[in-house]
Length: 288
Image (cartoon, rainbow, N blue to C red):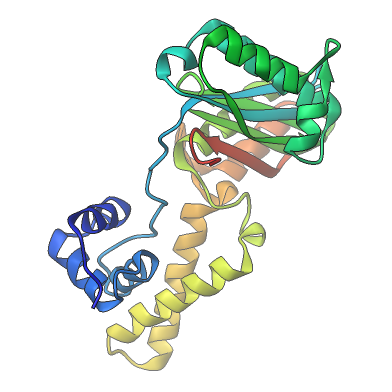
């Protein structure tokens, strides 16, 4: 039998919000497997959809840069050793320079980004200079480059979370201040609520299958007739989509609207149409 430690129980509690004894029992049932323990608690209705435990320990910053026409954007996560360096303006300037290199080069991977140049200087050399000047080990954890009819960005907490959102536009200028305000609002929503996907069609098939399995097990626990169980499971799946798909979520600035409705409203005000097509969200430390 697996040894269930206090730290394991604590981590499960942080992920699910379930009580200490329930967490301990669930872990014991599945020989200490954290993911299976989450499923046990969810089946019993003792936990909601569990987010990954926030165990981001690295310092550093997430940085975004948009192209002048706002049809492409880049984001990087640059790690360092201490918060003192992470909030330093010089460190931020290095991060901004590397992000511009990513935007211009659109590299295939981190190795290609290291070789990319900005202002005649390779990213690898910029990193070396950063280490020398800041006096701390610095590493490039990850990056993303997106292209679309329109792109908006948002940075939260001075670089703790970064978001890029892509849009399909018709009759709307991506550089227009009104559009960028709308796009920033959507990016702020992604930063705050951390959706699984942009739309229900984008939810990974394995996630859908897993959720359906959980909801069917929950319904079976009710002991109600099978046809009622199916409706219960379908209702919970619908709730999952509305809570975890960006366009179906209640808009945080006006919960009477969904994000899709807010974006549609913005498009009409600008004399065209705006549709969310995707997003990328980086939280500091998750790139390791």
